[in-house]
Length: 265
Ligand code: KIV
Image (cartoon, rainbow, N blue to C red; front, side, top):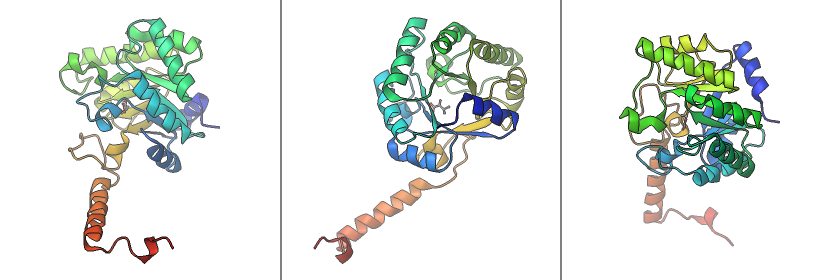
């Protein structure tokens, strides 16, 4: 049985950090599971990391479900959440219910994640009342890129912090079981965390959240572009893989590969 929402509350109370990582395919999901992630997220970041888009706006519901199905199939015993993509839940509560239901039914994931705060509280409440666990996401919300203009740190001024706190409280009151806080100064994070009781997961939000999340490719150092300041590369997989493929190329060209061990009799 995967961990559930009550386990995450227990972990928060026991001050055991919750570890979340994104995954987009079967191999990554297996690796994340074997490494002991508490939660695996099919993030809509797959729009940029897998699909090579400029931002997360274009990824579709069906594409998210395709990846979610594959990830969940590798992770029977891990709690898996899936992002609802841009404009798959903002239009109306009915739209959110239909699409969140479709994600859960077709992929088997355990929860959905949505970006937003107080304005979506009514929607979150209906989803939760209908049996759909909801993870909130506030602070920097990448789906707001066309309003923000760039991916800016949020909560640098008092009025923003007040809004972040209001949004988090509204999400908790509506029944969200957890909130992702993205790109915030630690002081703002502390302010939000001290006003709610559900677990918080940070990404670029400092040390005081109940857990952390990173994008898989960032954590293992697979991307060519320089990662943002909050990322720690726990490996340099890109160099490792390029070197491996260079050796493969050289061995094919020189006739070293395939050798006797690689040939059927
Ligand atoms: O889309 C995503 O991968 C996310 C996480 C980074 C929180 O929302």
